[in-house]
Image 1 (cartoon, rainbow, N blue to C red):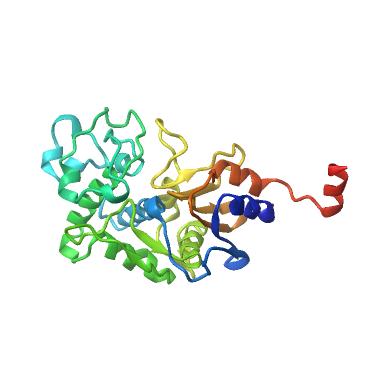
Image 2 (cartoon, rainbow, N blue to C red; image 1 turned 90 degrees about the vertical axis):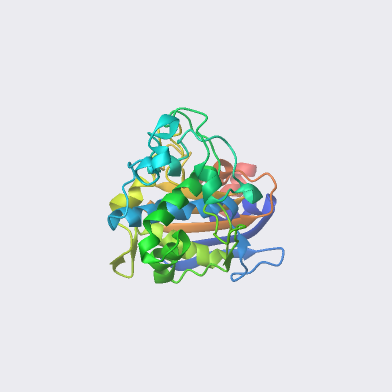
Length: 296
C-alpha cells in the first residue's frame, strides 16, 4: 500500500484532510487549509453511507425487510407504477425515481412520497436524494411507536456505541433532517464509523449489525454493479473487499477490509477521482534506490 503516493495525489487535488487508520491505530495524518483532526467537514452525499448499514440493523431487529415494498407501509404506493418498489431499490438507487433531491433540494418526506418513478423499478440506476427520503419516511413510520426518528435511531444503534460524534446535521423546513446529505463530521470521527464497517459490524466484542446484513451493503445491483446500499464498490478488479462513501467536492471514506484499514479524505473540489486515488494507493511502494534506477 503506497500511502505517501495516495496522499500526494489527494494534496494535488485540493486535499484538506487525509487520515489512515489501521487496526484502530492512526498510521498517517495530514491536514491543510485550517483543518485538523477535530475540525468537522461537510460529508455531503457521504452521509448516504449510514443508511444501508442502519437498514441492516433494522432488519436484524425485525423492523423491516430489504425486499418489502414501500406499499407495505404506505398504501398509496401499493398500486400503479410504484407498487413493486422495494426498500432495497431505494437504497441502491434503482427504484426508478428520477434525478433530483440533492444538496439544498432535498424534499420533505411528504413531497418525496408524492413522486412517481420515471423508469421501471429495478431497471436503471439513477443517482439522487429522493429515494433516500422515501426510505426515511418508511423508517420514520416504523419507528413511530418507539418515539425515535431515523436519525436518533442511527445515533442510538450505531454512532453512540462507537463514540462517533456528529458535530451537526442540518435540518429541513419542517425540522426533520435529511438522509442523503447534511452531516458534518471530523476525519477522526468518520474513521470510527469506517472501523465498524471494516470489522463487519463488531465493536469491542459486541455485534452492532450482523455481518450478513452489512455484506448486503456491498452487493451491487444489475443496473449498477458498482453501487451497493449507500456505498460505492471498488473499481479495482482484484480488490472486491474495498467500498467507499463519496460526497461532493472529493469527500471520501475508504474501507479496505482485507487490510483492516480505513482512509478518510476531505477536499474542496478540484480534479479528485476515486479510481485514480485507489490506483495510487494500491501501487507498489518503491524504495528510494529503486526509484533512482527507474528515473535513470
